[in-house]
Image 1 (cartoon, rainbow, N blue to C red):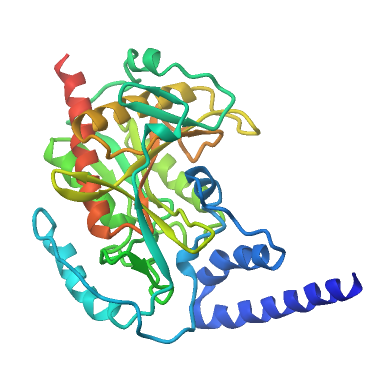
Image 2 (image 1 turned 30 degrees about the vertical axis):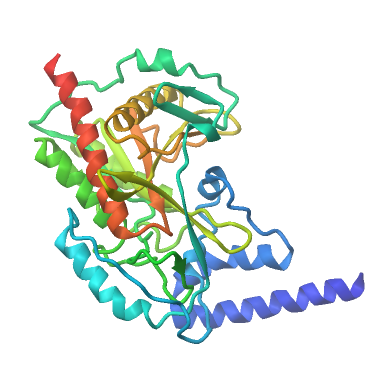
Length: 370
C-alpha cells in the first residue's frame, strides 16, 4: 500500500511539471482543458462518453480535442471528395487548404457515423423524442398543443440573440473516417469555430427579416466560469434590447468511446450530409434553483424539434432534458443547441445551421400570421 501511495505522489508531481511546461508551450487553455483528464486517467476514473448526457455534463472539464500528441507524421490514409453542391465558398477554401494538412497527419482513431433517433429514448410523441434525465413527468402532446411564450414577435427590433459560451469549439475539416490528435479542432479562428456556425444560423434568420444580435465574444479561453462570463453579456444585451426573447447558445458536442472511436451524429438531408443537432433544455431539481419557468423553455424546445423534424426528417437528436440552467432561465425561449460533435465536419455543421435557421423563421412567421 505504501508503494502505491508513493507512486501516486510521484505521478502527481510529474503531472504538475508537465502542466507547467505545457503552460509555457501551449498556454493556459491546455491546462484548463486537460488537467482533470490526466487526474482521471491516473486514478482510473476515465470518463465514459457513450451517451450524450455524459459529454454534456462533463463539457466544462473534459474536451479531448485539446490533446497534444508527440507521435510522428504519416500513416493516416487520405482520400477526399469535395462536395460543391450548396457548400459556401469559404468552407470549400478551408477544405482545400486542409488537404495539405491532413495528408501529413498520423491516424489516432476511427470516426463512426451514427444517427441518434427516437429508439434511444423512452419518451416520444410523433416526430418528437426526449431524453429525459430528470424526475419530471413530461407530456409532449400537451406541450405541443401549447403556444410557446414568444411574447411580442417583431421584425422591427432585435428579437433573437445568438452567442457561444464555448466559442472555440471546432470541427474536422475533411470527412475521412478517422481523426488525429495532431490536429486540434479547438481554435479562436472565427472562420473555423462556433462563430462560423452561428453566422450561418444568423444569415437564415436575417434573410427571413428578423433582426439578430450575434455575440462573437470568446468566453472559453478557460472552461471554468465560461457560463458565468457569457451570462454577464447576455444580461447586458437583454437590458439594451428588451425586445429580445429568443436566446440561442450555439455549441457542438463530443462523444468518445472507450476504444478511442469518436461518434459522428450524421443525417442525410436532400442528398447532403448534415451534422445532427441536439437541443438542450433544462429545469429545476437536483440542486438547480431559480428556474421556475423552465416549462416555457421546454415548450419552445419541443415545438422547434417538431418543426425541424417535419421539414428535415432525421436531422434532430432527441431533446436532452436535464437538471441544468446553462443560462436558459434568462427568457422563456432560451435554448442551448449542439451542432454535431468534434468528429463532424465544419461543412456539415454549417449546413445544419442553415436548416435550423429556416425552421426557426418558419415557426415565428406562422405566429406573426395569426
